Length: 120
Image (cartoon, rainbow, N blue to C red):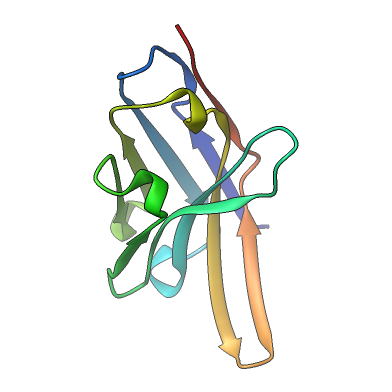
């Protein structure tokens, strides 16, 4: 079965940086749009950054200019470079792979999540 495994989370001070990675198995990344989502306690899961199979990127307004998403399809990896971290970035971060087979049929795969805590 498909597996997405995130790594790189941890505790960092405000203004610091972290790099999250997602490694996929039994999946061909190049066929999927990929994204990073996050969920803070008591809040809904939200899209942080996405990158399509063609390489187009989009970011949540709250992270523009601070986060950079990248993909390595040959290695089945997805990364999120997070700079200038703020306490409000604290959340569990999830890797997502999405493919729209038809207008009515979409497949989503999720990783188990990695905790990012920004605190002094």
